[in-house]
Length: 270
Length: 274
Image 1: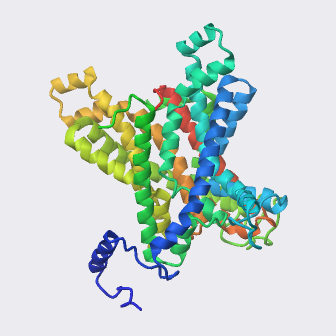
Image 2: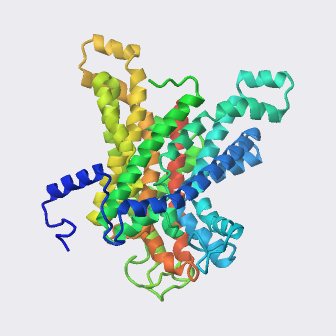
Image 3: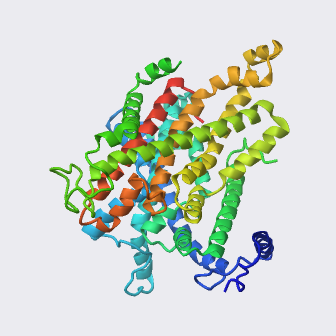
């Protein structure tokens, strides 16, 4: 057994062999699954991406709306409620929130499934299948999105408050624009630059950011795979996951930088 | 200086709440064990008793007192938070200040190093290290400290970059002070605000990560921590929700406190948003 996986050779030799294999696109074979590690990983990526993108998109949209609402009702009841909410939301551990959501909405009320990505008793066909998937997606996406929601709301609120005090906004008001148009067309776009930075930063964590949520909800993604591989001491698989995750961070950051260049004319790429 | 900061901090509501909550954490972390009615590892009552009576927060499946666990758990959270933030502040300041002060190829080299550490998926690495090297609290704290510093380094660098051109730094140079002395005595005191703010935020973040790992069963199981209690609570979510509610609330309140402290500190200096 040891000879078959090359474990009887000295450590530095194993490392060199490993690097050589990776360079040739050979990521090794999982001890546990008995399949090429890369194949297993690629199988898991869509589930993680679906979860992360849903959480990211929804929390960004909701966060911008909440932040703008808070800023518009500055220092009145809606503002206070939203501010307190973001503070508490930002301090809540995602895994604990996941537990609470499961207790309330899955176990007690029975509105949503407790775990998994698809129904255990046979997956329906066609459109019902999509609905089934969405049904399973609600709680994990909520759990994952809360922290991001708090962050985006805070940033938007601060940005819009600042922008509303600026002179170009006064000009826009003076020429008789409706409050909604002043907010949407003039204040918001300028207030959103820091939001773009933060959301862009999160793109780097698309593959790695959902570990806890995936574990709690038994979501069959990359994070869950990492956890299982850890427990079964599946080193080739572990190494490959870490490698793929690191590369994905670099690629995502590169893409984010390129998008900045396109969005903000002040940014020049050398 | 410390007294002045505290006085200004106490002027805002946010600062007051932050100081109060963080103060409670520190007090519990240092003396929590003294107030605890029982040993958190010893069964002192019937298993799974709801809150009330002799056990204010109820008991777990082995009859251990939940209140005692929550009080004792503060120590680990405080330790992890403070050591992580201190390590990150130390390394981050050293790297950021050197890079910003000297510029040129030193700056390039140190900043590439910073970016390299920054892109490492932190939680992935923590799971990996905890699983491979065993769940020792020392390992975890070291790992957190050594992955949290890039944020501090970048903030400090950008600040030092602008400070080094100020007149008083030029004056200090013309008097003939050595680089090290200028940096430590004249530049760094002006960066302290930013280091403190990011440090306070890191305390909360480190506490959450430690709790997450312990929750997965990858934490140090020889000490009581809130994450460990939440991990134990999992099979009894429906039958004994108090096992999960109290340690969870303790976490929320703690992190809320350190975040508010950071907000209050930031308002004290009123530095421009980054």
